Image 1 (tube, rainbow, N blue to C red):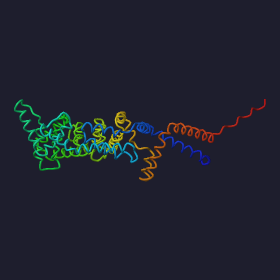
Image 2: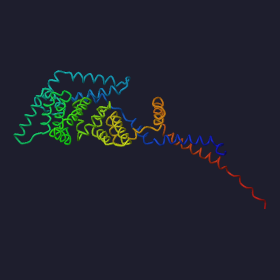
Image 3: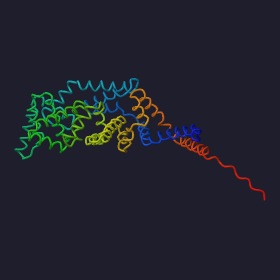
Image 4: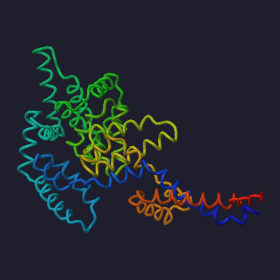
Length: 374
């Protein structure tokens, strides 16, 4: 009965303690969210302009399309990005540029940059490039006893796959990567072994992974992503990430080695918790990319994992009803984040006062005994 009389004191104490716990338990994630929010957004216009002027037109288009997908309709940056995209596509469609790049690549099969190497793909479409590379590599073997075995194998594969349109151009991309030094030793060795063993299905699967990346990131972008794959399994992991994540190619373009390493680490996840962590890691890579180089530095600090951990309130929203309740919980969490600096001490004070009042009600001070007369 005594506790029942103090029910309101107890309810107030529980409410204060619960609110304090909800905010305090999310401290790491809250600090990561605040740090992330303070970073400047990715400068899509400058990046597209740089890539266009560097001749990396396919990557420029990929970045511009991601920017238009990300930026709000009312953004002032959007109109500038649309103009840069129009300039890039105009250069892509330039007949003179196509003749110059494809012609140079068809004749030499090599160049001073990755972009000029991509021109060699034009010759490989018509088998001329494959025959050229076979003759060149065979000539090198006759003269000095050395040859690039991977280029020789890929040239033979290119001839063999001419009747298979879906992978016909992939060997040309791999040859370009090899000549540019972007094909890792591990992946080069695996291609060689698969070709020698006659591993048709495995080699076709590898080609399809390269095709997936090249279609999402452009052939030049795929060449750069190939630098981060040491074997076919890692290549497949990167291809799945690029294919299933709308901003996957953009994320790998910005985060490079660090982002690819985080994506690849998730492929080894077995337990449900490990898979959830891997998914959070991929989400962190995309989030970091949207902040550019400052986001990459933030990713290195480890704050990404804390950021991608859902807020306690969001978890309640999901448990109750996936929809308006979850969205409302997310908005409430966003409102609480910047106010936690004074909310935590205020709630702590409330809890202390409620405990003091409850203690006073349970154990009231006894009146002092009057002294007996002498």
